[in-house]
Image 1 (cartoon, rainbow, N blue to C red):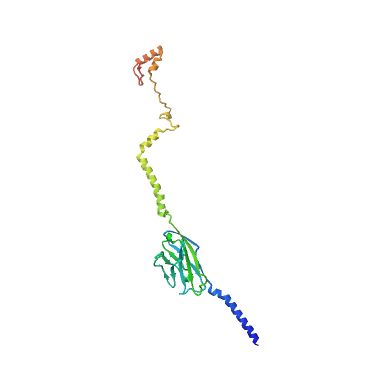
Image 2 (cartoon, rainbow, N blue to C red):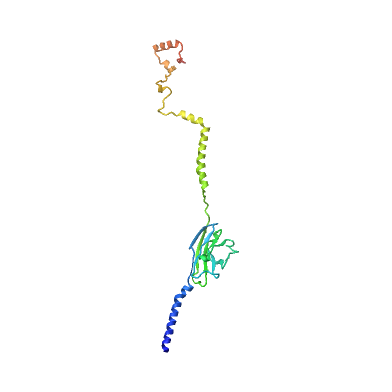
Length: 251
């Protein structure tokens, strides 16, 4: 009867060790923290350093959150924010007066806001969460922040767009009207100087053609006349003057 009792005891020990080995990891290694791998911002912006966590235990007053910063140039990390029942904001150093707590532990959020980002804020930020007894697993996570100079840009509001579409055409029309009022004579002269090839002269549309003026005789023409023509010319010269006279010789 003594031997069976020893066998039962050994079996119970094996079962106990198996149960402990099976359930123990789930009791102490169930917390996980996650953050974005990279964040980008412009100088002067407010940046949300997002951090979330998952834990099998409900957050209590023993839960803690720590944010640390390591410069882009390297060096040891510097813890600048701590939460334990309440937020402890930095009172000196690089982040003094520029950190705001945005975490909600009951929802698994441990985020902070970095106000008025500067180029000196470039670096790696680490979020660490402890929620006893869940202190193992992946209690930390990293995010790299890159701050760049702000690029000047022009933003058109709805009012500006409306004014551009209304005032610009009206201004152009007003200038055209002023130009037509100040320069009417020039426009009329140009209209008279140009005649279309299909236009008719005054009187042509009624079949009346202007009488061409008789060409006045010049000295050279008189010199080339023969004797008969010359006598005829002097007879006409002795006649009374008509509406259109003849040119007298200037030779």
